[in-house]
Length: 189
Image 1 (tube, one colour):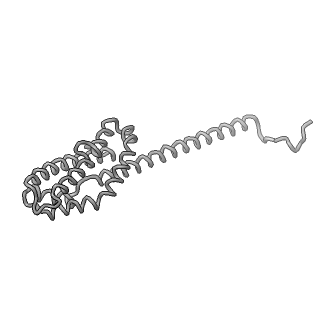
Image 2 (cartoon, one colour):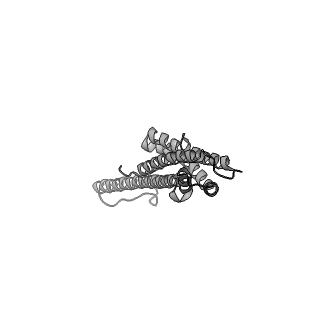
């Protein structure tokens, strides 16, 4: 015979028990839905944060008018001087760490971008970072311009042509950066 202390007495009818079990199952399903929705929300929030961070890093790769561009414009117009070249060198030095960090973070973001927006978006990011006229290549072209002027008394005759070519590539890069920035954040074009 069972110990009376170990038996569980359920008041009510079997119908009441079944009804209570159904309510419990409904609550558990609702709770599971909340957990699933919470996980979706957390994942969505993470993806949103990741996209915003990538867009910010892309912004850091653009060539701003107040940076090297204004000195390049003077050189390309034939009004440049060695001081403009020195200012380009100083601007490149001042931004080197931030640009390198942005390029590294964006390289790490590439797979997420490719998964979210497709292979073409990932390839565009690669081109922006290290393509023929990507940020890394343009910084090296600016360094070459600076080095070609080192130790000279005046700008070489080729400087305006080099500066104009670099400016053209910078404009194209900035357009690509804006386009991918907007795509990452989901803005309509």
